Image 1 (spheres, rainbow, N blue to C red):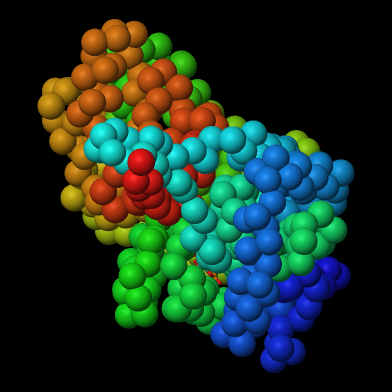
Image 2: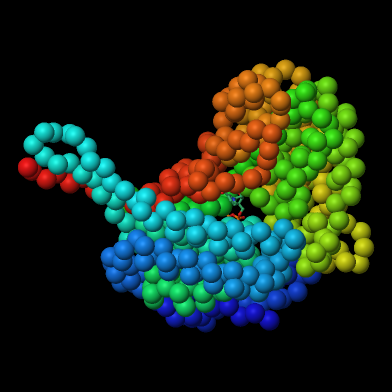
Length: 479
Ligand code: NAP
């Protein structure tokens, strides 16, 4: 049984109210631990500590800040096995996939530590009798709220850019999977000055909302769903003028042209759908758009591949797919199977709880594929964030682009063709922020990640993110 603590002002603490939230293993529904349920009073304490620590932190050289951040990354690597085990039991993601998340968490911190000297201003020839310079200053205390699907990766990433830019941070991990944040809290306590990082666990409607509504926190970065992103914008606007960046959901198209090998497309479609994360990834290509000339051949191979996905104990290295993350999420995803049937889509495989004693408890849903999908159906428009793939057939490219752009989302897209002109025409026409040509799923630090339309605001994973935690100040020196 794991009992994690929050980090406030350099101390590992429980909530002031003494309330806790249970963590369940989604594969078995058994309790595996608990973590503090923070409320406004805890967030207020975190803010006081963060504000007090920030000035000294910002006064350090960027090299010193980078050095301490690298120590946090090293601490994560040292405890990688422990983090991995906790994370697998808390999220239901399989151990073979989750391994990479712990490494990504450390890598994200090191990437931003490496940008230490990139927080640059400019000299501007705005007049001849002044020296005009801009400098970049930190906001002060930054609030970051992260989702459940990659908990340690997002919590660790959340610290890096704001700290490097000289801010202190309050992080709110997701209620469904907060235990790994307890380990991150212990590492930050060891490696960073008190108050520079504060980790406050609890429900979004209490702890998260208290961060958003705190009058001292002007800069907020949120990763999560569109409805929560909209709610955060509304709540923040009731308090003051705040700078909010949003990394939200996706309903991402994978478009395969007639020149593609059906076997290859079947393979990449299964990968890109992220069945191995139960579809719980913002970049999942949940809309597969096949040219009619390859449709039948791809579908025959794709359904065989989907049928062979091995579901099982997430801690078993041979398992290729685990359960959904929580009961509420499972119920919602299952309701989308019904929505597909109600809308007249053809259920080609899956859609049920897998058979066998191992799956009697837990939030298990088979990998599911719907054919005959059209763009008006709910399964074509709404982000399901579960293992449900919707397949479209297209014949005319203009029609394919219309379908691809027909949702409120615009996060990623994956285009498969051997013709560079066709590929670039598609890349320019599709309204998404992150486009792969003949690839899928990969993220490359240094390349800005973020969404068009309702998929978000702002860009992460590159120098844009670092600079987004600074405000520009103009200084005019009369010569
Ligand atoms: P969510 O329900 O929107 O929750 C995200 C976070 O917001 C959680 O920590 C949640 O706390 C908190 N929260 C909820 N209500 C809040 C409120 N009123 N004020 C402040 N905070 C609040 O999203 P999720 O289900 O965890 O994650 C799945 C979503 O994240 C999907 O839509 C996915 O596409 C998106 N996502 C996007 C990216 C990206 O980079 N674009 C990456 C990963 C995931 P509780 O958990 O306690 O409710």
